[in-house]
Length: 434
Image (cartoon, rainbow, N blue to C red; front, top):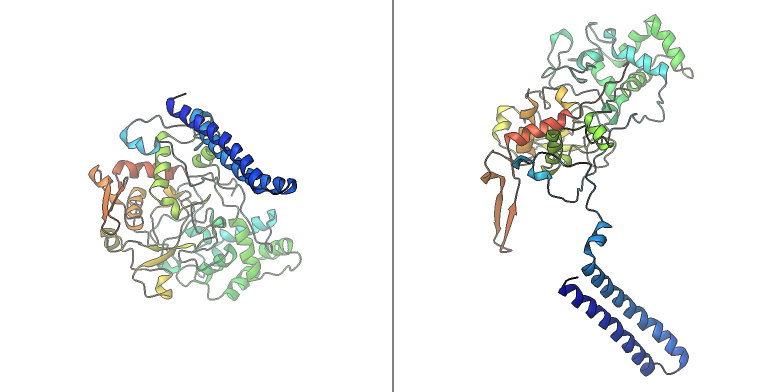
């Protein structure tokens, strides 16, 4: 016990004893009779006891700080990185982590009017792969959304190729884990998988069917579908566009990819991430990526998030990347909703992102490393530099006469590679059989 602790403890004891004498004196002086003495004693006593407890706790903390602090741990580290290089410094200091990391569920939610069944999923899968649902018989849903490790639910093209070789205006979003997104398409114009499934069928530069009625007629004229729809939709066993959409959506809800290295890590497997990936995970949070790419599906547009599913992009305009990659030639929601010179887009999921190149709504960026570099600069206003000088920002407030010093303001090449390594840990397992 040090001298300061003894002094605080002595002061506490003196305060308590003095308080008791003061209580007795005040009660005896102010209370005219025995009954009033009791009421006054209880009232004054409660205040003095509360004050005495505070002093006692201060004294106790000064004597035994370690045991008391251990009752309120800052955080529970699963493991610490074994890397001792300067690049790992940002994850070594103990601190309270505000962001909660969560694993992807093993099953996707479904609407009450479209419960899944094995038969409905099988029917939806057949429709998903059937090229007869396109105007020239050359394209199916699966043509732009390839369910494979290599393509990750996309098609690997900057923008997709529709019927008659037409080139679409936007990159094909992945269909994997789309069941967790509350709005679909890059501009979020569909509010469910059922609604989304119908759009490409009648889009003139995609599958090109003249109308939804023509889709229904096409399906009705295929004998095997007649039996399948009677079996799946027994209450109303008719081929309708609503039932076609429900079947396709039921299949798509099975296309989720849990059990990635990241999922295993947050579920308790401390060896699932490498040290490099762990550093990237820390950077992903500290840089600000989790402000938009949050939750189990790494998207603020997911059913796990109640906030707006849209973001302005680029948030910081007039950068070299904006011109180089044509980032504002198409402005998404903003094209019709406002006169903004920047785009507004649905936040995409980062699940399996290392498999879904090229990137952004126009598919203009081939490299995930370059995509991270762009996002860090145009969306989070981070300097791109390997210099220690650029990693610190010093700002002087004239009004407040204060300095504001911010560290970790630059993203180095090493840090970008670490974030990419973490993103590679979001690659999950494809359902088998799909």
